[in-house]
Amino acid sequence: MTTFEGLLPKPSAVTPADGTFVSDEPVTPSVTFTDDLPKEGYRLTITREGVRIEAADPAGAFYASQTLRQLHGADRFRAASLHKGPWELPCGTVEDAPRFAWRGVLLDVARHFKPKYEVLRFIDLMAAHKLNVLHLHLTDDQGWRIEVPAYPKLTEVASWRTGSWVGRPPNGTKENDGRPHGGFYTTEDMRELIAYARERHITIVPEVDVPGHSQAAIAAYPELGNTGTRIAVRPEWGISEDILNVSDATVEFYKNVLDHVMEVFDSPVICIGGDEVPTVQWKDNPVAAKRMAEQGYTSEAQLHGWFLGELAAHLTKHGRRALGWDEILDVGDLPEDAVVGSWRGEEAGTTAASSGHDVVMCPEQYVYLDHRQSRHPDEPIAVGFVHTLEDVYGYEPIPPGLKDEFHKHVLGAQAQIWSEHLDNLRRVEYMAFPRLTAFAEVVWSQPEGRSYEEFEARLVNHHLARLDAMGVEYRPLTGPHPWQTRPGVYGRTRELPEN
Image (cartoon, rainbow, N blue to C red; front, side, top):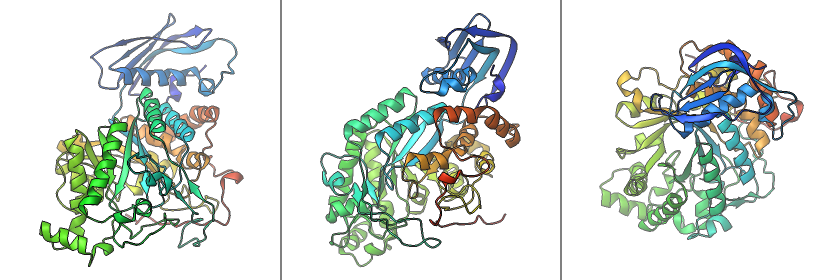
C-alpha cells in the first residue's frame, strides 16, 4: 500500500488517520468548491467510507486528482492498468496549494522541431508534476514553427534547414550532419495543443523572438533583413548577426504575425524575446539611420528598445502583456505591464521587481536543463554549467536581497529546455528528468524545512517508479545508460564562478 510519504511535489500539510479505504476500482471522488482555500488549492480527504475533494477552483480539483493518482501507486501512471486485486488508500487529509502562480517550463521547438505527439506527451508529464505554464519557443534563426496564413513562406521556407551542427564549438567541431531538418504546427495543430493543455490547467505561452534570432524569417522574406541579400535558414548554433531591420514594413509584418498569434493563443502573456541582438547590421544602414534621426537616438542599440516597444504596445492595445528576456531592461523604458524573464542571472529579476515589473525567474546558473548534469565524460553533448539534481532542488526563486515588499512581483520560475542538442523527446526526457521533478517541488512547495536527502528518498522510493510506468527515459541518478551517451560528440562547457 502506498503512503503519504511518497508525494511529489511535497504538500503543505498532511494529517494521517487510522484505517484504509479499499475499492475494487480506482476511486472517483466527489468534488465540491469552496472559498476557504487559496487559488489552485485543494483539500483531499480519505476515510474508510470514501474520498472527497474540496477545491478552490477547477485547477485545484485537478491537482487533487494528481495527488490521488500518486496515492493509488505507480500502476495508475501506465497507459493501461496492470493492477491486480483491490485498490487501497491510506486514510487522512492532504491540504495543499502552490507557492507560485507561474510554474513553467520552456520547450524549444525552434532549434529542433518536436512533432505534435511529442508536445502532447510533454504536456502530460508537466501535468503529472503540477506545472502550469508551457513556454513554446516557436521561432529562431534555425527554424520557424508556427503557421501564419498571411505569410506562407514562413512555413514553406523558414521551417526547415539543410543540416545541423553536430555538437558545439569550441569543444566540438563545426561538423554539419547534412540531414535536412524541419517541421511546423498548423493552426489547427496549435489549437489542439492549446486545448489539450487547457484541459490540464496548463497555459501555453508562445514566443516569437525579435529583433534578433530571426534569420529563418529573413531567409523566407529577405526584405525583413538589412543587407538585401538572400540568406539560408541557419544550420549553426549561437548568435546570428542577421537581425530584423527597423522599417515600418517590418514592424507591420510582425504586428500581423502577433495578430494571428493572439487569435490562436489564449495566453494573457506573449513572449517577444528581445535577447542577444547584435546591432552591427544597423550601423551605417540608411533605414536605421533614418529611424535614429526620427527618434533622436544617438546609438544603434536604442533601436532595439524601440522595436520591442512597438510590438509590446501592440500587445497591450489588444489586452495582452509582453514577456521579454532581461535584455529588455537595458534598451529603454518598459511598458508598465511588461513581464521580465530573468535568464542571465538573478540581478535582473531583482532590478525589475524592485521597479514594479512582474518577473519570471529563469537564471541559466540554476534552471537551464539543457546544461550538463555532471562533469563525467559520459554526459551526452555536455554544454553549459553543471546542474546536478541537488543543485536544481536547492534553487530559491525569490532573488537574494529582494525586499519583502517586492516579492509579489516574482510570479514564479521557469525551467529552460533549449534544444540545439536535443533532437527528439528521448533526449529531452533525459535532460529534463528527474531534475524537472525537483524543480516542480521548488515552485510548488513552501521552502521551510526543505531537505534534499528527504526529497531524494521520496524520489527513489516512490517517484522513479511512476516515471518508469510512464516510460520516461530519465537519467539514472548514477549516470547515463550506455545508449544515452553520445561518444565523440562534444559540446561547449562552462564553469560557474566561485562564490
